[in-house]
Amino acid sequence: MALAREESSPLFAGNAAGTLRLIIYLALAMVLMVLDHRNGWMWRLRYSASIVVEPLYRLAGRPAQGMHALSIAFADRKLLTDQNQRLREDLLLANAKLNRMASVAQQNQRLQQLLDTQHSLELNVQLAHVVHVDVGPYSHRLTLGVGARDGIKVGQPVIDAHGLMGQVVEVLPTTSSVMLVTDPNHAVPVVIERTGLRTVAYGSRGGDQLTLPNIPLAADVRPGDRLLTSGLGGRFPSGFPVGEVREVVPGGSGLFLEGHASLAADIDRSEDVLLLHDQPEPAGPPAPEVPAGPPTGLAPAPAPAASAAPAPAASTARDAEPAQ
Amino acid sequence: MNRQQLSFWWFIGTLVFALLSMLVPLPGALEPFKPYWPALVLLYWALEGSERINLGLAFVVGLCADLFDGVLLGEQALRLCALVFIVLRFRSRLRFFPMWQQALAVLALLLNDRVLLLIVRAFAGESMPPAAWWISPFVGAALWPFLFLLLDDLRVRLRIP
Image (cartoon, rainbow over the protein chains, first blue to last red):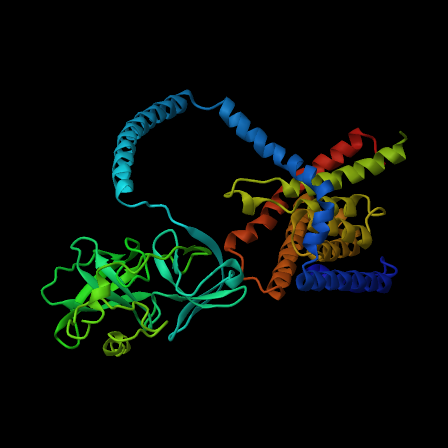
C-alpha cells in the first residue's frame, strides 16, 4: 500500500469528481444489497432473467461435460473390466435375492389368504393433514385439517404408517383435535405380542414414551417386546402396533413391574395421518367384565381413554394411577 | 466490419468470456483455486484501454456477475467499482511496472477485494470462510502475467487499436 502516497499526484485531474463518482456507485451498490437482503428481490429478477441466464449456465457447464466425456473415452481398460466384474457379481447376488423374495412373497400371499378368511383386513380410512402440533408437558395434541363437515366423530382412532397415534377428542366444523397416546391423560389397552399378556399403556409426563405401570411381577415382559392394541374396551380396533418395550423396572409400590415403551408411530414426522372409520363394536369379552370391574386389579381398563371421556364405573379407581 | 466495431466487440467478448469463466463449475477440490476472472479482465482493460473503462461499466459488469452468480445483488458491483477505481487512479504507474511488480500489485488488489467481500459477508451475517478461500487471489496473481500477455498478443494479432 505504498501506492497510497500518490494521493495528490498532479497527473490526475478531476480527482474529486472521480472520488465523488466512486462514492455514488458504492452507495448505490450498498442500497441495492440492503434492499436485496431485506426483500429478496433477487429471485424475482433472476426469474425474469432466467431466459437469458439459463443457456449461459449450460454453456458454462460445457467444459465440465467435455471433461467427463473425455474421461470416459480414455478410461483405463483395466478399470472398466474391474467394474464390469463387480457389476456382474452384484447382479448375481441381486438375482439370488430376488428369487428368495419371490418365494417369500408367495408364502406371504398364502398366509394372507388364510388370514382373510378369518377377518377382513380392509380398513375404512380417511386421510387427514396435520395442521398443528402441540407437545407440551401437560398435553400432547395434534390438530387435523378435517372436521365435522368431513364426517369426523369424537373417538375415531388415528394411525400413521407405523402404528397407533391417538384418538379424536374434539371436533370443530373444519378441524379436529387428536389426543396422542403419549398424552399424560391417555390410556390404551394393549397386548404384548410375544406372550399375549394384556395390560394398559398410559402416556407419560416426560415426553414421547408410554408407561405400563401395572405388569404383574411374575409376567414375562422383556425389552424389545412389541405392544399391539388389544381391542378391549371397543375404542381401538385390535392388532395395531402401539410401541416397543424399552425397559422393565420394579414399580414404586413394589406390587407391580413398571414398563417403559417407545412409540411405534412417528409422531414427530407424520404430516398426514389416517383416521379409521367404522369403529369396532364393543367386543364380547369386556362387556360382562365391566360390572364385575372393581375386584380385578389387572383387568383391562373398560374405557381406555379414561380422560377423553372419563369412563363410568371401573375407571374411577384407575384415574389416580396416571398421575403417579 | 470496420476496426472500430471489431475492437468494440472484442472488448465486450472478453468481458462476457470472463463472466462465463466465472460460472464454469469445477470439481469441489479445485473450487477455491478459481481466480476471479471478471476482475482480472477488467484490470487488463483498465490498464490497456482505459478510455473504455469507467466506474459505471464496472458497476454494470458487477451487476451482471451478481445476476449470474446468484449472490447478493450489488455485491460484486461494489467490489469491482472499488477495484477499477484504484486501478484507474494508479494506472500510469502500474502500466510501466515490470511484470513481476505488476503481478504483486494485482495480488494486493485481489486481496483487497477479498477483504471487501469479507466485510460485505460479515454485514450479511455469514460466518468466516475457510482458509482455502484466500488462495484465489494468489492464483489470480500467478495467472496475471500469462493473461496479460495472451490478451496483449491477441490484440496485436487482431490489429485492434
